[in-house]
Length: 364
Image (cartoon, rainbow, N blue to C red; front, side):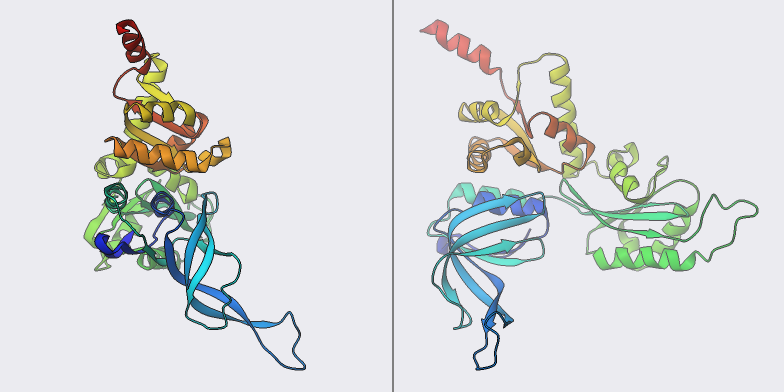
């Protein structure tokens, strides 16, 4: 999330949403009664004797919406806001009734709150420290996948096919591979921004050629890394790359690697029958109220488990209020699928709630 203006005393925040993680952050920051200002579009009806009543021109407007409802649709990566329009840049926009806005990555919004508390500031600060971004290339002579890892969320930018087939042995038709490499390079340059790490891997020698192409670019070569021992390509290769040993060494300080380690600890505690763990929302909420949650991970498909959205947001905010950490995890990754199988939310606890309850009962 890019924060371009933050004035807590005036209750003003202006941000640009970059990823689905940011939508979750906004869902936790926004409350009914807040005002959100952003660009939208409305149909302006044209008047005239020969104008069809259902026809109109779609115009771009800036709208200020006082929120009455907030809901997150993580499956399609958007936040739905409902409320009343209190300001509009075009006089033709009606202020009667309720209106809806859809917020998605790439959009800039301004939030106005009557009071900006320390809890909201803490949530905002944690969202802006997601660490480095990683551009991933999983390539062989037939196909390349390009992905972008931001925080713990992986996006497949695109895949590129070379037109070549087979392994390039005797009798294989020669294909000019330079246009293939140029297309991959163009994808990387279109997605890259200062500070990004470019990670290249894949079977055979094609990855070495791709690495040489990248090293000729003055920007991409700044933080380029080749990982060995990785033998997959395409979009599946990109998804597999983030759990490879080579990538984990490169990205040892990334949010995703930290989350992967937490999920591994979750599985370890479950397999050993340890009690310092909670999963499913009711159990995690109970632990949060007791101040027992050390760290919590939520899969972005948690709502498929019929989880109450407001109860989830309340629980996550409570965890951070009491010194715990909260992470969102991409459900398309293998670690995300593991969390999804446990009800979409898991937590490592500071202590065993059952033991504490027994001790308290015995004192009475």
